[in-house]
Figure 1: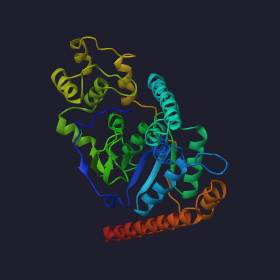
Figure 2 (figure 1 turned 120 degrees about the vertical axis):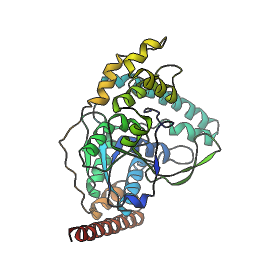
Figure 3 (figure 1 turned 180 degrees about the horizontal axis):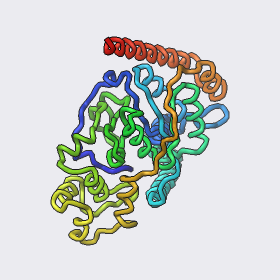
Length: 346
């Protein structure tokens, strides 16, 4: 779910071409869930190989990563570790939603409501352990670095940016800002008109950058106060938030009283699954690691073909073409960077 700060934060629309040569830490599980939900047959069935193994996650990861590399963008995928104990309620809630969606999907299929079945199928996406291992194996073959987080992937991605090992965090959620990420990149690889879920409405969507420093300056708050606002609205650790308190009201309350601790006594019926201070501590001092290595290599073309085509029934022509374009983009970005560095030295 993530915290909903969309109505508050200032943002800058960008062109993906402006990210050439930049490194982006991507929440891997967030991306894989997206691929599992979206990449499906018309009736909602995920892509599968001849052995019945799901391949939607591999298809999305491979072609999206190739597109990024072709643009000269340097992805780093960050995988979740063990979630904090406080997230247990949210995880159970998500599982109940998926179980309900499975029943509705099966009923829609039986009754021939194909479009409705696909909608419910997208809500049933479940990331299994072998899918994460598939993803890591593919990234190794593609020469793309990945980092195993000890806990939350978004916290680790934010840590990479704070340390200067990545230029941006990429996520559709705003949690990275609460974890202190200096720069959040949203709508990565998305541009143009997009249909809103379950509505016949289309909106213009473009990549956008949200800078934490600008957010704090324009809202005239501190990072800790931003976390307080997030807790009032609702996070993965207290999904319900405070009833009746939206983003703008939360901002007004925090600016009026200065802190969450001073706001809470003024709110009747405010309930939290745990002490709010424990939620705040997760964002202020997340469980992250410095034990990782960031290095990009040229893709192992034959290894990729053996895995995706030989084992998972991908089209060899499509795979080879995508890798060829990715390598070309990487080389062009590397040559441009080298030339720019040469001129800077002079």
